[in-house]
Length: 162
Image 1: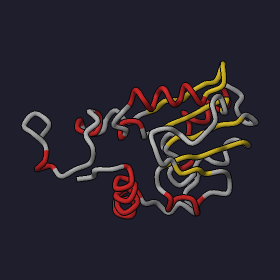
Image 2: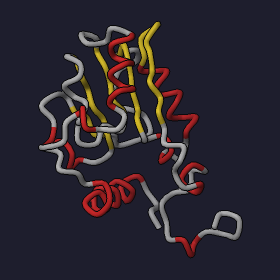
Image 3: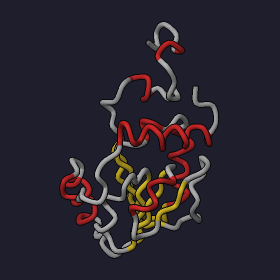
Image 4: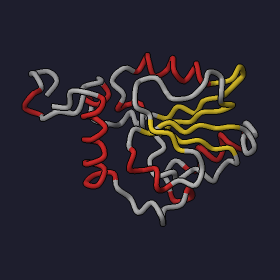
């Protein structure tokens, strides 16, 4: 069972190779299934030259879609894929100053976050007044993930959770 933030980060880095790993050097934003939605968001709110944060930025596929891009994720191993700022999130408080960003996007991430309310308040803290958010969780994920269960063996779940 994953019991601490540190354990969770280590687990995530190890499992990334088995389940999430992509060929980050070759993957382009245009090849991502959420590219059209993100491009429309960036174009519609004229964000090309604005300061933007991607929460759960993975391998940085979208870092070249705006000029002032920042990425954050919990995996230290991802830093090597960035040529723009990448900051490792080590706690539930994102490591950025208040009202730092004009826009934030988060794609297929928040269904994995156990304390969703806290994460949403953090997004509010980071956005400048009038800032915009593209919030696109993968609601088609397995119910135990959406219910905020931490990653653990199936045998540890009680009746209804199974």
